[in-house]
Image (cartoon, rainbow, N blue to C red):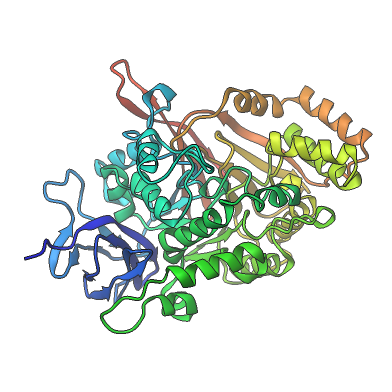
Length: 549
């Protein structure tokens, strides 16, 4: 008699609304998956088996423990688990709405090289803390803002596994090459017990950043022209986008969006024999990579008096040098409509998720705008080529390096906070990661806004900042650095922004996780950081608690 089906990854609790939830799993073979009253057959991608179940009939403000059964055998929770039962808690109950967020999680502590000296994993520490905390204090959502896996920086165990498949002296070497190798990264990143339990019981919303594909992904047209010439790139980008669609994006969608998604409907096939969806997803990935308008990765989460508009800051870029944009016009219009719809719905807190910070330290912002100006003004000439080299070497690719997108987002947020789109929410919060440290900044010009506009950046969850980044971002907020970079920008006739912002807190370096506590019109931002005690054990400490509203 064959062995019973096995749970490879998950369960992940993904989209949760007042009456329904989606639960994602990966299994080791085709089977039937059951969670509460929801039942689904697995679907197949590249020989791997997954299921996304829609659990319906839940009560608003309720808490429902659940188990996972494969072919009627219970496989979750594990026997003798030290963690509380996984549960689905729907919005609508009393008390504040709590959100945990962060970005940049490099594998798990057990798989990285100890010689790298990476501090304790913030998600692991957070899971352990929650397990011993009253469930009323648990977050209602976990927002992961990019670099959930690192395709271009693999761990020693993964490199050994890659070497068993192919010659690592041939590009892409120790980086991953295709969908199969991406599945290894997700097992490595989401397989440790702490994070596995956390993702099973806290609803999650996710978006990619560059390392899911490759460092500097879509930095510029010159970068793209160079990478597409590499013989390994096509399999890499299609494998990366396919795996992102399966492991992350499907769970971002509501049940109604899943029902309207033609790709998702086609993937499930007919009858008991699953269709391998890899060819159709490869075609989808190729189309999405070749034309930013072909697929929208941005999405919206509706959370009672809170609204999250998650913005794709990577795949939807327009890279034409004279018309650089973070998003093409159609998708930016979609974002504007989603934000204004939140205001029309009376939302008290509008959250804009974007992997890349919108408001940077002033000196860094000036340098990115200066660099873009030179690259455009001298495109095709020596100064333009030097500006491009600096852009790629120094990662000058945030919102500030896409000047018209920076200003367009600014106009949108100012109009919302100023009450032009309807009654102003209490806060407009831009949540970001990427830069391997944490800080809070507030928009102060134009003055007189009814709602407050903040940039909240939290990164990394499990990684570390190179010394050069730490030095650069500490200096970047200083008055003297801003004076110097402002003079450089003025000499180059860089068009200055009419927006002004100030640092509220930070920068903080290390492994960190942010928390928002949103109660009516009140909002608080808390920051937790990891360290080690005298015995080398992990310590999780609150380092910031500040009012935002």
